[in-house]
Image (cartoon, rainbow, N blue to C red):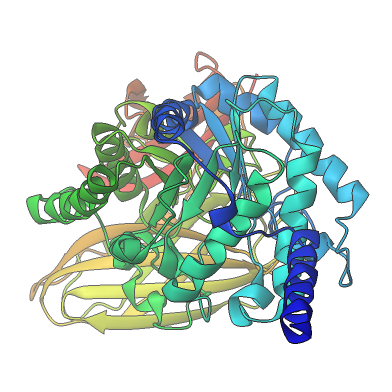
Length: 556
């Protein structure tokens, strides 16, 4: 009898301890069938409030905001609202701002900063998703009571802090991408406990649960959410095909993604069918389990060519909406970016691709032009490829170049160590690479200039391509381009072209491909006073051959 009493006392003690760290057994909570039905209807409606969203990635998820290339500004939130988005997802590395000992208090200054960003969004009627990102200790040691208790404590603090905040527009995503040692089985055991930690305090907050294995849609079948919990949206992520969407990503530890640089996505039948197959997996899981789905992250990396990014983004986004999935594009302004934080504007075409039908226009990152010399090379010519690049940067003297030939593809990759300024100044620098001689045939040159920021270790890549034909006949000498001088840059009234023939012709087009003016260069001066402020492409031809294609800037 005494032994039984001791056992009961011990169990009571354990229960008190578990309650103190924020967890209690789900069986202690009675949910009626009517409540379940009401929660199911409610959560599908709330998922519509997320709608079209965007991630402020690489900001609050960095160890310190700004270290990974983005400090969130209110003007960015306004730009998101003006573009027609419905929500903002805030990836946050809470563990970097939490004390290492019980009660694992979150830094007050950091909490206030999260409040500030959240309120910028809510006052513009943008829904907000708060997540836990980069909790590496929990991923690696999911059975360690220290990290488990920190996990419970973080959500207890956040649930209490935001208890009165609009339940229709604030969502809690309990953990981003369960991974490493936090396997599907371990996630299915831990997840009900963290749900219950929140439900003890707030029974109405809609929660977002990521699928296991980095939120892969292929692993949705391994996700097990308690049937008693219906106020839940399930999240999966989409960066596929990885050869395209993640090409050149430097963080991969399972495959060298640099080998896929230059991969395009043009919307072929097979490419679209691969997307549709993935969508059917997600849709069938959602219907079979009667749970709404959000695509918490998806995007294509900035290293991919601009038109492929727009085509892929527009098509994939359309399939999400056809299946009634809400979504949050990743990310706003850094690696998979849709917005230029340097120029304070959306990359050309991305608002259309994310909110409507995309247009076949530049995303603002491609090189001004790519040029080969001679224009019509023979097998005896040593080919010089030149790319004129206009970027918010300066040219380094410590560049290196790698040239590879794979069949008919010539890849030219130049590396630049830079410090990317956080300003709006732009300079033009010229990259010239001697390719040497090649056998007769048709080739595609992929010219990739990769800028590595020495301060933030960010990568900023500019890529362009050109098709060439090498013949057996004598090539046409082409020394003109290296002699041409275009000045001033920027210009307001006239452009002066040095070392040009009187009979040379020019045309100026805008970045949408619309012809603005044309004529003969004449005395080497081109009148531009009638052009509006902005950027244009100047093309000069001699004897029907284009000898120059360069971006110009007009100011008034």
